[in-house]
Length: 310
Figure 1 (cartoon, one colour):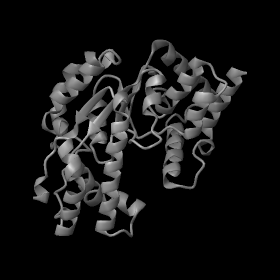
Figure 2 (cartoon, one colour; figure 1 turned 180 degrees about the horizontal axis):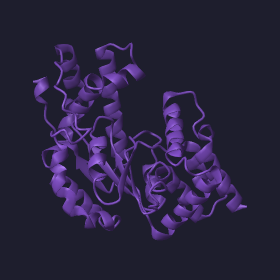
Figure 3 (cartoon, one colour; figure 1 turned 180 degrees about the vertical axis):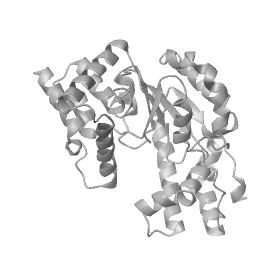
Figure 4 (cartoon, one colour; figure 1 turned 60 degrees about the vertical axis):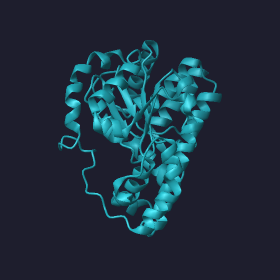
């Protein structure tokens, strides 16, 4: 019975995205699209062959104790930038933000599945959108940069195979500023009619909520990386990250000599994710709001007021 249930869940997840992401919301729509894109990436496989191959790879990954690297952050904290650097090393593979459907998590917790099957299904979420099947590399290390939400299963990630979780931090002022004034395309998509101040208030609340959730999940994180350290000294920052994680990702640790190229990702045009846009002028009303709402949080985290607010 367990095998039948596992195979059915696997089949539905791969080929019927709306089974796990059914709602008519932007978040569910994006997650359905990601599953469709993952399927298109391996279109040379027919459905039966892909299902069999994924199951084979997941079993192999389970037996070999393969892990996923999670970079948990608030949007505009530099997670794509860090993921881009990591993807230049060893068998790391940036899969961007991939989330866990609540129903799949429920099945992992409560379904009539063996422990092995639970862990394989959990691993499926990050492995499927990676290039593991495409490149015939079941040992690939997905780098999942999903953001921290109330339903992000940080503690469950540890339970389901001891994966590695990094908290990526950034000055709260810079996050709120960047989300409001430096991501015009995203803003047009999610809230095109909001005024600057109304939209800024939402971003400030997002930042506060993120660091509140992070404080509640602090014991789930294996490491903490600051965006500012990553930009100022990417070589040392990523070296320290790999040192902490070397037992889980020994292949990448052995490839650490390539870290000498890490500096090239900052300000040289090599990176497609490092933001070189000029800072926009922030009017007094926006400055006052940022200072009022985020000064205490930033101070507690050891950050200072940015120049554009002085």
